[in-house]
View 1 (cartoon, rainbow, N blue to C red):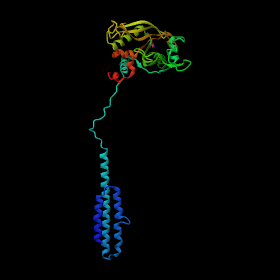
View 2 (cartoon, rainbow, N blue to C red; view 1 turned 135 degrees about the vertical axis):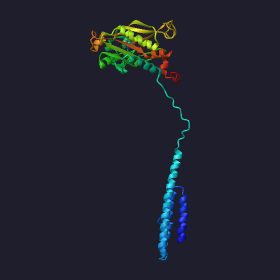
View 3 (cartoon, rainbow, N blue to C red; view 1 turned 90 degrees about the vertical axis):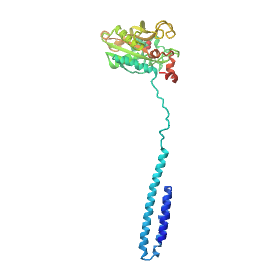
View 4 (cartoon, rainbow, N blue to C red; view 1 turned 120 degrees about the horizontal axis):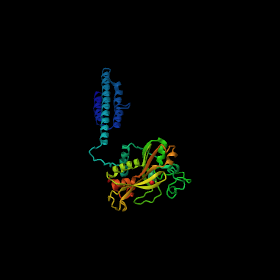
Length: 341
Ligand code: PHE
């Protein structure tokens, strides 16, 4: 029996050490230590032994069992470690493989121009406010002293959103004059950039959607001189100092007097070229002194307060800033164009 036990210990230990996976290990445990296992089978023959031999063999059998059990445990640990190593090897990230280059985008040229523009006004103490693109006719026209029969209200020019012409896509940022006064009261100094919509065909200088920057200053004693001084300073800042401007009389329902401001052509210096269509001047904005009716409509006494308002075309500004010749380039989002800024 001693030889049998020694043989089991040897072969079983060997088999355990050589097993390659957890299920094999379990099969070996059953084969040797299980109820019908080889060691158990030997123990069943204990009865045949002499009284002297029995405890010796019993002790030896227990030692063999303990030794096999610890061999099983050890091998289980070895296999678990191997499995872990295999998984780690499989999941290894090769940090030396060159990565995929992620192309960083950047701001659209018109918004770069807008940021520069905002900075100029913020430095002068203006606040920047935002407003709705879906607007009430009341704000887009009525409160801006634009009568019901004014041509700007025509369905052929305006995107209305209902049949009774109450809501629309704003045709100008000027309704923000009213909203700003209503929200913040006076005195006020603000600009408000945003999209506006008109039923225009697309060409080199027109688009049904474009951007304006509205401006409004109201305080006691504000005059046309403040308007001219401020706008001239802004234009020098944008187009370079020494840039000549021209204030032409104009008409807007919500300003009186009104003007349009032209900037001497940055391309030809005023001689006349294709960029300025031979004029030597490029129209930059509309402006004027806030109409007394607009002020009183907002509950402000025009005898106490006065102010000026202006509206810049943002695309035109960006086109001048970056010498862009066609408005469509700004909206087409052609990457070859955008990458140049
Ligand atoms: N809203 C006018 C336009 O779209 C521009 C403007 C703004 C004129 C403010 C005067 C004062 O043409």
